[in-house]
Image 1: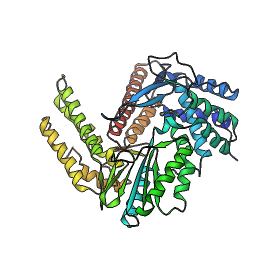
Image 2: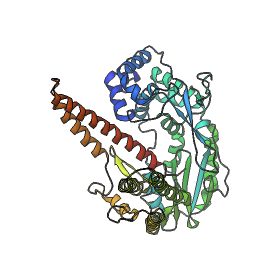
Image 3: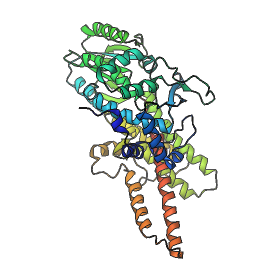
Length: 460
């Protein structure tokens, strides 16, 4: 029997959730409370959450709007940022929904989808593809239809009430705080930890219909759908999926020549999906996603040029550039999770592209008058092969190890404090404070690194 949502709001669960998933966050909600400030009062905040959830009076604050630019030719995407307190409640809801939707949602990773596409092209079962883009997906989700689907799956009224409040809460711009609360009558705000799960659940019956015993292969990631089929059945499949979407209040983009939206054609002519480009036996990266990594590399050198105009020692500047450049090239591992452009596109077989990227790094070094040291600058072409042996390689950094080592050293230093007021005690306290600052600096740098290398990935 499934636990109730209230069982998930015990004190230790909330504290552990915060420490595991939220403590390193840096986004700030409408209340202006930073993560650091929230951490100082975590126990008090947990008690407030427990009391309000238990008596049914918990209210979400307004969400703060943040606009994300997708490209020169696209409208910005609106992201909703909750307060830290709401993030913690939403994280509990996320865990509850993940359990509730177990077996309902097809939760294949992007890499599993790409692997499946690669295999099905290679066995030459199909000659045609259909690519479908759902128009304005998240803002178009019908609340009443979603609630009907949820009520069939979840009987916990307290959980349903929290979900209802979470999806109805209004998102406001930083300048506009006087908007009416719970005024959102359609759509699920992007940026909440439960948004992706609810969106996947909303489409789960359609996903199942087109993957169970079908004569074609169906892959979906968020609002992008790819179907591998035979040309003779393509029109019927297109019409059926369009009708399925219409039945739940969604529309698909009209089929046309724009490869980023809905299109169809012969597999032999090539197609794109999730940033990958499939042309015959060749699997590469689409042009706009290649441009992203070129621009990311250039940003590292431009940052170096900016610092070179300041009074910093050249040796220190170059060492820092090598470090940030290597993160761009190899990505990194944090808490067991891999990040980076090359990791995302690790299913390509286009060795020529990797050599071109390595050559771009060399040219950039020459252009910005940075010494190209082969012993210190890593290469895309080698990192690509090292990805296949992650258990043993040291070529791709696991930066969490450095932070864990610092924390262990800090604990040892804390044990050495005698707390007797002596000069030795004062000196040890200074050592601890210095180590604490180092750990915070390392964690902050890790967040910056991840944000920077993830910015290079474009697949929607």
